[in-house]
Length: 293
Image (cartoon, rainbow, N blue to C red; front, side, top):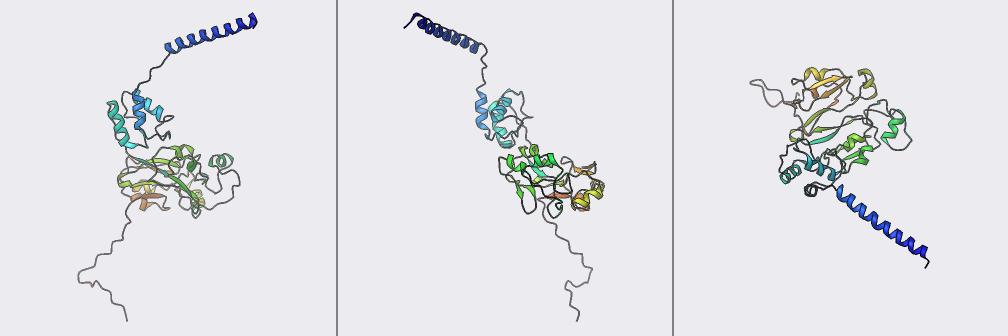
């Protein structure tokens, strides 16, 4: 073996050892000590990594929980209050109860209510479809029905009803992670409080068209008439840009707006069916009506 080769090998080995020592000291100097509580908190979280907490994943959320002086503003929608109480107990902090929410579809433009005016023959994507034109019906604000929200839901909580032509939410499976809200290019999905006994009232429409136009393209569209605003005794409804909106924080679920809406654009969910009350009989009136001969 020549002297040159030996010198080359010795030089490379020496450089390797030198760089190793330098890297070791650099790593020690800039080493970040991770709080061991992060692992504990992460183990308490559901591990869905859905992003519903606003973080990149459960690990990032655990780090935020450990670092935060108070965790009242942080919440895991998948685990809910039960998980947050366990996390708070492990950190010696106080958990704040949060009202459960659910995704609602602010569009009831089914194939019966909102007939198609053309046929989209491109890639089945709401985002792609919305980028090309307003949609395959006369309403440019409604559900496109291509399932972008379905594709991003990790909990199988939203589906396309092929018969009706729009998406619907399974409230038993929905954890209010908000992925569907972000995916919808028409912004027709909203996270709303589930409400007492899972009862809630909301406007199932997103159209900003004026009344005559809105009614022409969809029979159950909000026409901005304002009757619901006048009927509400709790000042819970506002009308802006031809569209009514019900504030869930103010709504007392009286349902007066539901009865007043001429197009049935306001939905009351999970309420018992109203049974018509028979008219009171006058004194002496027989309770049995005899058939005339």
